[in-house]
Length: 302
Image (cartoon, rainbow, N blue to C red; front, side):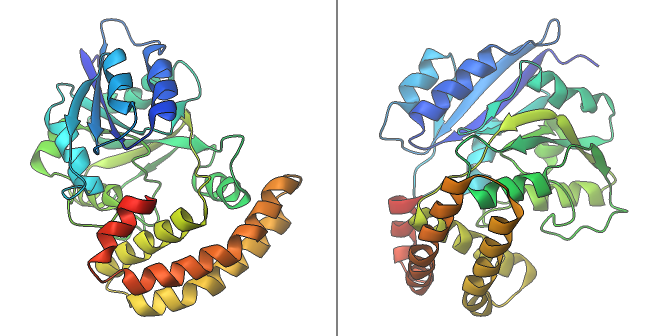
């Protein structure tokens, strides 16, 4: 099956340098014959030159305000102006590992039962220890197809999903948009529901992108609060209990990861030095999480 137009939606906030590299490598992709690439940028009121860079690479640009932003709403806004039958989703700080990435992402859609394709994320050179371990664990080198017969929760747990590197069939999105209320993990919910309807998702390890987080302690703390809040809202777990448990879970994880990975001495030292300030900030942020200061935290540290 040939696709005349393939769209790609990228959510952006102050990502000028990462975006420039991402768009340059997208324009260097070797596309299937008679297939065109449409690039759509969803800008979250960036203060740097992200919009200017987007224009230089011929992207369509739509803006979402900070007050309206959720991960799902930003995607829905971008996809709504796309014209492709297949819509790729990529983080601004991710970039293709080779010139065949797009081809690897869209090939599985030749099977009409495939609703979504997820690619493999490999750590960048500056990735911290926990990111190296996490990405090797959750994005293996073996392809896999998921269906409703697999043991999958409503959050997508038990399945490989990430909109940092994904592709969806737009005809399915038209009937079911991404959830605009959840704090994160919108791809897990969307894919779970698609599988419940009889569709399948495909994890293609050949579709590789470089993507990893090397965040300072404030952003690490905020990222974990986002995840805990998301799981609490979807799985009805106890937010306060999960917040209390996190430092102990984090300490265990740090020790295990440092012992598991050889070399990377500098990354190990950074991991140790970041631990205490991250936990302190995590508790401070958790006290403000249920207040009006939650929006301020996101604007300041996200």
